[in-house]
Image (cartoon, rainbow, N blue to C red; front, side, top):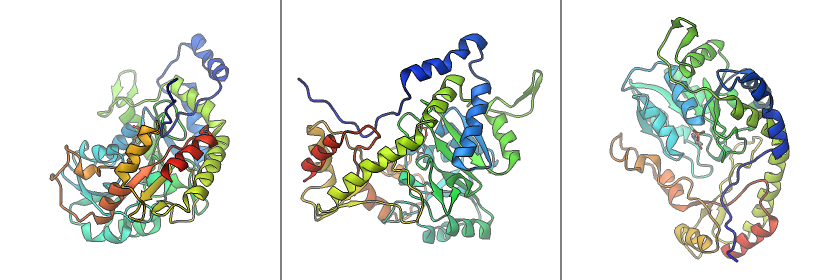
Length: 367
Ligand SMILES: *Cc1c(COP(=O)(O)O)cnc(C)c1O
């Protein structure tokens, strides 16, 4: 018998019968999309759960990010200070808005943008800062806001990893001008595909509504040029069902995270990359740094685990700034820490149903 593979993550799904029952009304109403009943309901429940004043659902996290940036109407060619240590979507969203990414180095201890290095990168062309709460680790939100205020910049957080995270008792989506979440199947909360933008200014709701629905404001009225980025009702219902189990899911992740942590702690050269700030964690990922004291390189460890059917991930390698489509195209900034992280990081499997026995095997291979 072929040995089963263990993937880095596994999509959360509600009980089958529950979802089937929940989508039944769609066969009566035939209302499948266009800001239907369940779209509204999920927006309300997420506002409440994420503790944010306003929220707009989107078809996916990437379009949420693209449209959130577009909503500010920055001039073409303007500069945006951002991190290269992220999923490619962050940089694509900037470039697809005809803006120039200026890559800033990150902190070695948690992978978030190094706020102390932002100010040196500000020029007359800078319009915004787009940091990422990478792995759910909270950015230095106070320092970033200070710089933004000083130079009148917008702050757009890529909070794709930060679902359910709170900082100083406030929802993570309340920091900055807007925050963007992803509800992709591989994220801790999913609507199959989906995303959202959170903000506090109600005008932003109207703006994003136009951008996600062709700018249509009436049967015969289109007021602006918009895209199509609406979340459909099947996805919204998946979200409503999954949201019921989110607390359980977070607890199960934490149990597994703590279990890993205890066992990994006494392996030389293996070190967890954890949040430096005191915030509620969501245990979305389990990133470790493979140091020099470990007997093998990161790539060797990755290969070794793969031989045993364990799929770890080099999150995030290469840096987005080093990808074929962006390499040597933008301002050359020293990215020492980001490079070091990208070269030595490895994310281990972590999800709510991950078998503790499987964690034991993973640990023993690492050993
Ligand atoms: C997942 C992710 C996105 C994109 O979200 P999708 O829902 O997959 O479109 C953007 N940024 C980061 C950091 C992500 O991890």
